[in-house]
Length: 276
Length: 301
Image (cartoon, rainbow over all chains, first blue to last red):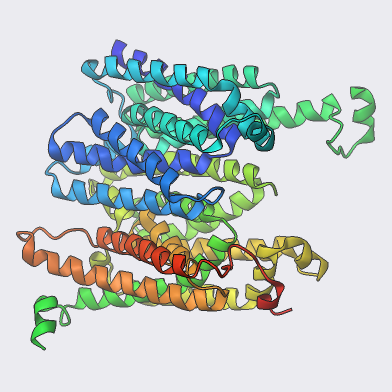
């Protein structure tokens, strides 16, 4: 169980951080596509007999390169969808060919409490470290090119290279999150937590911290709940993330109404006076 | 004849499940072609993708209640479409987030339903059937239902096609001409929901995007007008499903009686079509496609 909690903390830390940039950059589709695509890698790993983590990482990185290579700037949409489903279909084929079937698929798709073995804990920690370091180094250019792309370009921040780095980081984060949360719900963790944080906080630093905290909450609740009830981890992750988002939207809306945001049109002029 | 016999394994045309598979595949491909073209033009692939994935919840729930996956897909997709419209704001970034959150919650529920399926009904195969589908297991009694909903989707689309196209390419112009952009968008989203449900029954809920987006995205790399793109997409979709069914049927012969999944072949063929259309399209690069510009002349002013 100790391993599970350690893994969960790492997963939440990375998913909350990477997810923050995903939301800032508006690339939620990519964050959805890569985990699903990496499903093929996990299935292939089971077929060949190598570690699931290796299979996940290889396919997630391949997926990232495929999306970066095929997508012309600003039109990732349809290509991402196609790469995604192709990899899912390959995963289905691999699973069909390998002998172990329903339970393994199910764990891969919807998560497993004991998804990370003690042997995989060290590589998981290493991946987390590398990704966090890379995000730290790229913090300013990533934020800059997501908020004001023109200004970033003018300052000589290579858009293409930044985008590629970012895709690779998302890919690695995906690979280590999948075994715990499940292919289909990684996305929920990566989007739900930061989206909720963004709805409440305006400053990037605080939103980032809140995002990690919410991710940590979601993963802890999920693992404890799954351990107690035997329901799948993914169920708790999905519902807790969505609940946090709805709560964040409500809190954010109320705060904005009382804060008297200049570009926000309120229905009641009285609240503007109170806010001022 | 000998060539045909070499390509088509024996018993292909006499098998009733093959006939159902071909009929359902063609019907769904025809319905999803126009929807797909509009989805790609409107850059709403993510919505289609999310609807397909959320449909998993419906499929799993359908198994749980015992009404079969198609009804589950239909009900949940329409509900999810309406919810997305409700949550989504006009900015595309906010829309993506709202879509994503609905999707995440839906998949969480799907996980629970599958768990309950396996514990209550002891049907451990439900996840595979719902997620990855199999045309060969579609019962012939499903075909009329597919046709009814297919015709319904096409009828709705025929009514809203013109204003939708205008609203998709230049919302301001559409609004100026008195098109109710929001209403048209909502009608489109509902028909998309139904169409995705049909795709889900064909190749599985999480692969359904391939049939919806793939042929349309491929045809838009060549065709310059929406009308032609729709015709081409329909052709590509039918070709992919039929060839996929044929290859999967044949795979029984050469893969030691362990047939490869038909959904895999369909998706792989769609992807090949996309790449081929890119090659063909790059020769015509000089001419703008619908996606690059939206010349008002082609929209029929």
